[in-house]
Length: 452
Image (spheres, rainbow, N blue to C red):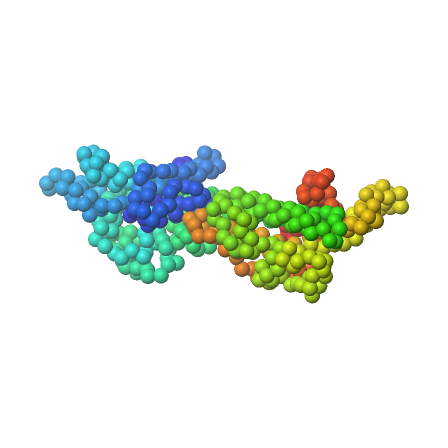
């Protein structure tokens, strides 16, 4: 019974072998990606552990660079009137002096292929069909290993897909799938692994388990992301400060705390999906490296997201007539009787005495406006949706995904979140936070469910 499936990822230089592997293993750090030829110089491997000591090992191999000369050299090594099969030919080559010299990179590929259960042959469909590719495929076919051809960069223009399929057929390779490593199809992984399962019947149980695990991991990440977003929204909704209506510095300080809370959520989402801050964009991740063109408190950015703004918000009435709209988004409200129900007057005085004193001294409760919280929710939800579908081979800046019309765009908080207004101790931005309060945790779960 096969317990470890070994897959060699092979192909010409710069066809996207490492990029394909980054997508399949969901790791943007694996290997090195560059437009320069011969970026991968050694065989690199990564092991995926499954249950009962089963595993899959992917091998990222160097690019085949001089297949024309290699093909001729192998044929020159063969004895006259030879009757050798393909593996014998490759074995003779590996024992020759040039396997350590001129064809050192090609020898690494062939050696790994012979020690693997199958090959994933990656093709850049933008490349024209050249004689070197025919010789390359003929050499690989000598390995007597199942070969699955993966047509890469199929989302690009100027393709030669039809010609490539014809060439593959001529050399006896008929297992072919389209899988763009940068823009992978939704069912791409399923088709890839099911194709391998048909080619390597003993590996079917391993591949089926890996496909199930992929689904479980995807669902788990999505649920964890929803909880990250929900907790952020609860923190910001329950957050308040006591301030005078003309205290602009208090507004700036509060805005900065909310910005940092958004950044924390962004960092947590990137980490959850195994992406780096280097994938930022001005639209998608506005807080990274001090970029504020799409700042959370920028009214134009808020409008561009489609959040409905009340007439009062736009006119400035909700944030105080003396506060600039560009630095607004906060609301001054009553400081009295904020929180759960209070049974008696003595309990009220004991629990809210300090807040009442603040109010009598000219202070009011400063909290984040509903529209800003809705804006924050849309930004984080759209970021999550992008990361859910983003390839780990994609090095372009993250762009926020488009969503269908949402309740959040109405600028009104859902009931499941609005309750956080009553419990200031739920916010990690306030002093005396009770992070593990049972009702707080329950509310976070309710909000997470409502996100999708």
